[in-house]
Structures are given as C-alpha cells and as structure tokens.
Length: 302
Image (cartoon, rainbow, N blue to C red; front, side, top):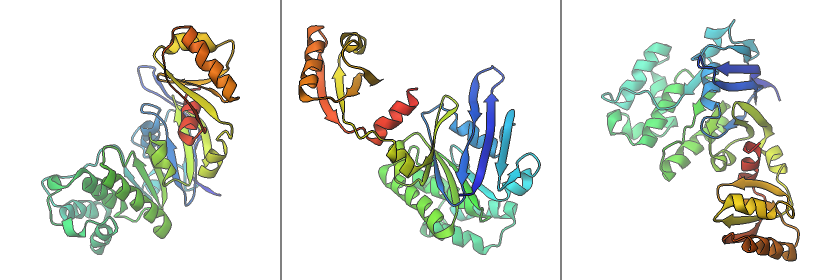
C-alpha cells in the first residue's frame, strides 16, 4: 500500500537533553486506521505535534501526501484535521457557534456545519452551550471541527481518553465510519491495546521513543506465540525470580506476576514447589494463552 504519512530517521529531544524520539520511521498506509500505540510518555504526542508543525523538527524527514513537510507546510496542513490532547472549545458558545467560528477560519460553505453535526451525531445539541456538553459530546464536537474543511487525513491524540464506556464506543464507531464511508486515513494514538484492536487496520508500537513494531493488525496477531504460558502471582517478585532462575527461563515480569513457558503439568507443579520452598507466597498460578495484551507487554518490556 502507498503511504500517506512517513517519517524517516526522526529524532527529537527537549532543551534539557531528554531524548523523546529515537530514529522513528513511521509509515501510515493510505486509507488505513493506524493505531499509534504506546505507554504514556512513549513519544506519541510529540510525534503528532511534529507532524502538525506544532514542534520544530530537529533531525530526520517528515513526508505527507508524498511531499516534504518543510517545503509544502501550508498545502499539507490544509489537508489535515486534528485533535491533540483536550478539545479547544469556546464553552460559553453553542456547538453550532463554535463551528461557525472555525468555518470562517477555514472559509468553508455554511452547509458544512449541519453536515458535520449530523456526522458526529450532535444535531439535537447544536444550540446547546458547549459548557453543558458531556466529555464525549465535547470530543465529538472537536472532531466535527477537525472535519469542517473535509480533510484527507485525521490525526487524533488519545480521542477516547477519560470517556465513559458509552463515549468510548461512540467515538470508536465514529472513527470507523469516517474511514469506511468517507475514506479518511486516520492516525489515532492510544495507550490501550484493547481499544486499538477494535478499530485499527494497522499498528505501530512505540516505547521510549523507539518504534518496536509496525505492520497490519493481522501481522501483530500472527506474532502471538501459540505456546501456552504459566502466569504466577507472588508476594515477592525478586525472591521468586531468584528461586526459579536455574530451572525456568523467565519470559517477562509484569508487576507482581512472573510469566514462563508452559511445559507440562509436572513442571508447573515443580515451579510451585520451588517458590514455596523459598518462602515465596504464591497467590495464583494459571496456564494462559499468550494473548495480544501479553504480547504488548513483552514488546514494550524490551
């Protein structure tokens, strides 16, 4: 597939010397919903800000729509709609009035306001003041603003963050609809793999500024190990690691849990016995398939 957004050897650090992005090579296919996934502080928002010109690029190249960002900045930005962090709304104005202000900025046709209100499901709340909107409604209004000029690409930073379950579902379905029915390429960041799984066609996993995985959702799912694993929850993770290190290769540690490969029932019994003999309290020992959540933990634990 052709890429619509691409970064090449992108590096970024703040003046304090703190490195935020380290040789980031992002490739967002045209027509995709690209889930940009990583823990908080991984560098997701910094990347999106660079793509929108909100931060000055330090090293590397940014290419959008096949054009270098630095040389074609205004032309590129006219084709992008974005929502970065919290929605920027005039809370004392109605939803429709908010859209009118941005319509004048974008110089769109007046009919576009009703079109985007319908698209995000806010027709009934059009004349209600934004301060009386729920968080989910504010998020949808912000997406409506981003859609006013009918952009080819939407860049959304954690659009479901802080929403209740109903708001999360509504926002997710809207993103899928915009992609499916209107052909929008959508770059959406999130720290929740379970959320990205439900809407993305492609995934990029970033951790400590490095891109650790990039590919289709199907390719990510294929990475799942078919081998079962044993998860053990204990009271003392350090002591537990010492107790089993000569007998069971450790796959990874997550909080108070150890994960090792499942070999047999007898080996699992031996594992439990070794821990108990070293005065480690075993709260839980269970065999589990290595699902995508565990895969994400493994990738970001590198």
